Length: 101
Image (cartoon, rainbow, N blue to C red; front, side):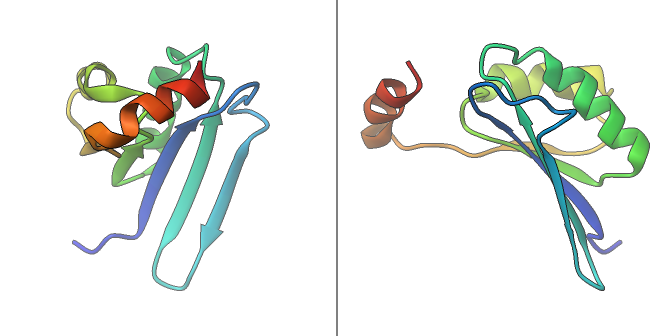
């Protein structure tokens, strides 16, 4: 099966998935990006379930979610599709935490 629809969920201050969602599409593939407020990470469960219902084949999460959220989402969607995450190396963690604090 070829990839034809996938999504990326990211965290950003003040973002709301109802307002901060965008979609791109080519003849072969559709991509959806959804922003969630950094202080409302739990909204990702609802967003992920909706994406699965829409037919998304995989979800990638921004590094701000971390491995715990990968597990929580995978469990919530009963492993229906792969959930992955962006990972920052050790040299980027302190600067990243400084930006996000």
